[in-house]
Image: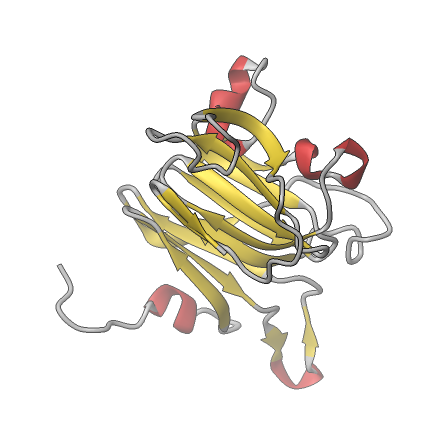
Amino acid sequence: CVHRPSRVEALWSAVPQRVAIAISAGEKSTLVLAKPPKFGDLNSSLPVNSIYGWGHGNHVPTKVYFPARTAATTIQGQINPVAIACARYHNAAITSDGRVYTWGLHAESLGTNKKSSSSKTVSVPRLVTGMLPENGGGVAVAISASENHTAVLTDCGHLYTWGATDGKDVLGHHGVRWQPDPKRVVGIHRAVDVAVAREHTVL
């Protein structure tokens, strides 16, 4: 138990040093988004940001590795995370090209293919294909996650949610308590940010 602020030495004392640009915490875990470290006098750096996480019995920050993807929107073929969200059972991230990745437990919170049994537990970030523009989604710019559901805002100000809740209408879909895939919330057009808790969503 820590009774006062304590520096995370594993990141601060790393060589090269990791500098955080965003942080998110759930009930039992923490995520940190760090900018690319610089190396010595050469002032050169890795091309992408990095995510580190710890919790659920693991006290040492561990780097989160994204699957390899070659596309024109990646930096030198690497995925560049720019936003993070940490919840009780799952995590989520947005990349520089506006794609959404999730990992952790419970398929409905992850927004992955509900027909796949392997989607119940995801140990590495997986692309949420339902948020791709060609699948009816959009370019993500903000994300938030709670114990059982996830919410994403796009560059058009549209809101997408998925997951499970005890109460109706928490996800923004009338009478719906379980939504395993990303679904746009009707009537939201110019939202600028989003925050979710266990049983409510705020814009």
